[in-house]
Amino acid sequence: MQDQLIVRLKQQDRAAIGELYDAYGSALFGVVLRIVQSRELAEQVLQDTFVKVWRNAASYDVSKGRLFTWLLNIARNTAIDATRTAHFRHYRKTDSLDNLVHKPGMDTLNPDHLGVKEVVGRLDDKYKSLIDLVYFKGYTQEEVAEETGIPLGTVKTRLRYAIGELRKMFGESFAALFILAPAILSGY
Image 1 (tube, rainbow, N blue to C red):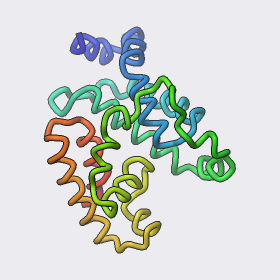
Image 2 (cartoon, one colour):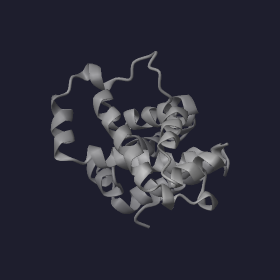
Image 3 (tube, helix red, strand yellow):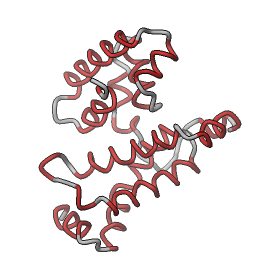
Image 4 (cartoon, rainbow, N blue to C red):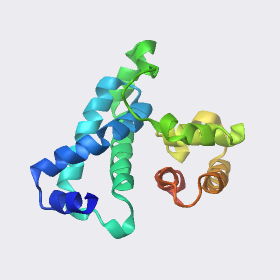
């Protein structure tokens, strides 16, 4: 069924994008919300994500990874891009604290539901805080070094070690690891 959906999406079948949204929208929204920490902005980022998916459907290659991983990478990158805009930085400074907290009972699937937070929580604090900044908050390695006062080389070494530990905990096939690794190891 998923193979047929991919074929239809590549053929620009409008119904396919709706089915894709129904199947993955909630999970993607949870990840985006975790990054942008604003429900309104997360909704916009999710819409932008599906526009990008529609426009770039032909570039999806099943041999390079699962459909969900491809979608999640697009959503995550779109969310991180949104956090780097001047408007977002201004919005964050003026947003109320109530809007920055994930409220129980929300109908989304976020990394907490996937078990990512629990597994990352098993890491030593010096690794856990770096993973949080890079993956969940969208910082670059350089921004992490600046924010924490840790030398860039140390940041890179700690992130590489953390990825290795997460690989052991998750197992090689766990999709979240593939989402973490490109962001953390970029620049190597």
